[in-house]
Length: 265
Image (cartoon, rainbow, N blue to C red):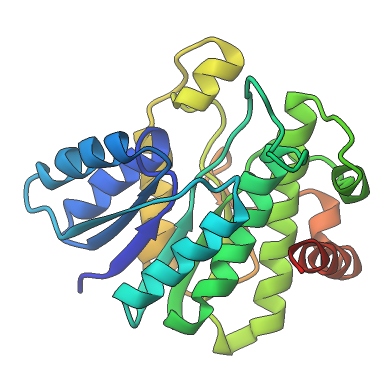
């Protein structure tokens, strides 16, 4: 049965490869990107895949939370239900890592925007739906107070903390919603895949992107993830695994979500 699937950060890297993989199965795809030109090129590339499903595009800058809110509203205006949300968009190395308000954009794009977007779309994500959140093998204890204080972070610290943070809120949101909410799973798509982000960060081509696209496709559509809510899948090990210990601490997860909610308020 074909599904309606929303992918953020779909104009290159793992997001684009996942879109191509899913459209070949006939699924309806909602593709997000920051650039209108890249979105148009992506829509053409995805539509050219044999047996492609319907494609619709949405432009938004996820470092601007007002645009994240508008993105959620646009999806809800166009669709009364979606089957999966893949929060794929992410950033690592930036020439200017600060938003216009002075906050680290890695935390905004990698952690807070997907939280805000997921919360906005919960009314059209049913109990049989999926939320697939892009985590990473790189996870480090989250200093959210430093983020709120607009303290500077190095690239690796900001990335690793933001990826643990999305893993933590995935577990907490899954616990809060229980069986009434969608399956919410955090996925490390595999280390050092050949995305633009990896090339810019580490200066080498990386591994085949289809490795990551395959696990995101499975997480969004396959039965093996049907009861995976609150779990973490490590594609380096090809199995569900233990994330950083902080993500296994309900009190820390709750505290982080309270801090995110406070920031959004």
